[in-house]
Image 1 (cartoon, rainbow, N blue to C red):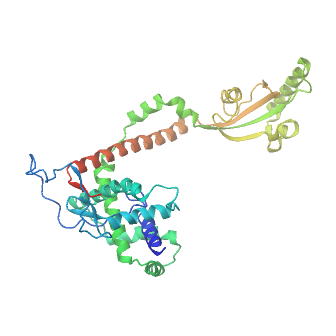
Image 2 (image 1 turned 60 degrees about the horizontal axis):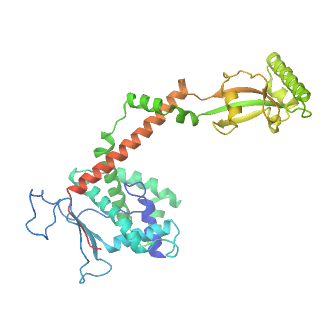
Image 3 (image 1 turned 90 degrees about the vertical axis):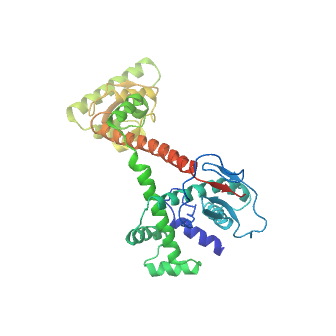
Length: 358
């Protein structure tokens, strides 16, 4: 239980890294970056080349707790680090071993992510990424809020009870910030979205984008007192009279409260803010053909005659178009960002020497 609490504490503190929040960063690479590889074939079949991912069984002489499960360039990932990741994942998702993937399955899933994390830290070293103490303090202050501790002293006490030092947590936070900075430099700052791309996206996806727009309407319902044509005609006449009253007096809500036979009458006929597709298609079409503030002619549905008034409507024009364009910019940026991040990770893997020992 104490081990689980310790791992969960670190997982929470390390949220926001390039890998999921429950994957702890491994630590600084040991020693300097490896020398540049020499082009050509390896000197022997046992010598790995950049871009290779060698898999070999573990050494029998290694201890269980600290056995190396992968080597990334000259930096080792240990079994205990991988096990902490699995424990943190299970604790965060409140999973026991039953009914969930086995530890072996999770290890195969998470080890590549730990390798990615280590590669990113090594790139931060190559780029000489620096994180100031003030940045660490500010980030730490944000992340410890989840513990509801009032002072850093209270937080240190909580960590001590879990067997964690504040220096270890600060080191991990610093590493997370270094990864964020190197990704910003290598990925985010190299992604841009042009106005031309936004306009093209809007035009190609106009129908889909309009589906997500909202509108606000009111209505009055007059139900016929009978099923014959005469009853329906009387309902239509009454609806037309009510429409004329509204045009003359301008108080839609008062007329709706007094005469509408719909449940919305108590709210002055207010249907609230609706997303397109929430109402029957014929009724929605009748409402959306109106200009803002305009009253409809009596409209017949299976329930009776309606008088609609459109209160407001988002559209792909004016302010509505501005909002949509901003959303589109974010969509396109995210797509480009993820594509470039994947390409960058692939690039640094191709020039790395990775050996998996599982």
